[in-house]
Image 1 (cartoon, rainbow, N blue to C red):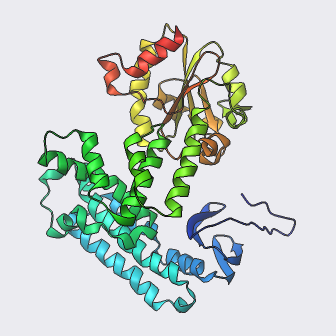
Image 2: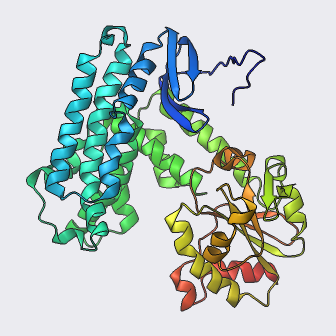
Length: 425
């Protein structure tokens, strides 16, 4: 967050080891921004218009021009999110859009001022996003039209892009989208492996896909991302970490692993302890518009177990879990367990009714000031909702990655229910 001085100016330094993508938010508008070590430029903002000048500024003027022209990378996702085009029409539309982005670059009057590393990234990112959408679209289209994905008669192009070996390419590792997409494709590769060898356990098939189906920088980066993702879910994957320690790797993978392990250990150290300062100081607002700290909120529930639901109305999985949360709460109604809901949405006092209807209760609702930029979310590195936490009767953290309520609560006692009962007794 950059503070403005009396002349409406700001200055900020960001330490970088490599090219990094971010976002600059101005009022209701935001713009993608790319930074590289050594960049030194000025930003002038006028309403929703933004201009960059100075050393290595031109790449961001190019991005803004592509945004104004409707060709920034987020425009790629519009047709995919709608899910209305047939797969054939979608493939043609995405192929045309990809070419428009390349043509836009080729015709850009100041293309010679763009850094080579950025030019390489722009072209690779364009191809990577295209491949990702082609891989994912049939499932999205089938869901939208309530049909099974296997019933679709897909063109050969879709099948080619879903061949694991066809899109593995070390030259694409400059794109975090490539690493993220390849990490997710491990699951489909593991399904192929278990179909070929029915004696193989699912987790072992994941390791085969991760260790044997990848090599070079792709394996290095995807393995690192896999381990870090496991850390974020409070899982220490010994097998993957042992493999990581044996492969040849660069400084980026090692430093990313080291930082993630340090954060994992830091979060683990919070278990059973009084509220950490970053929890305690987080600002909330209740349904009457009264501001209070997280610590003050927790004090109201002392002597009760707290099952904390961090959620948002805009989150489908958050809303889908609410009926099961209601059922779980009914099963625990005699126990000292409080279900507390903290929304990331900005909810005005008069707008709480839809929230109450969605959660089936008017009790224990709060808004998290600054949402994903709140102290709690930043400290715990939470990048998604729903996120659930459990605190014991003394207000000590028990689990920062607790299970979500599920349909199983209707027919059996779940592990989550057992945990809450044990803490309550």
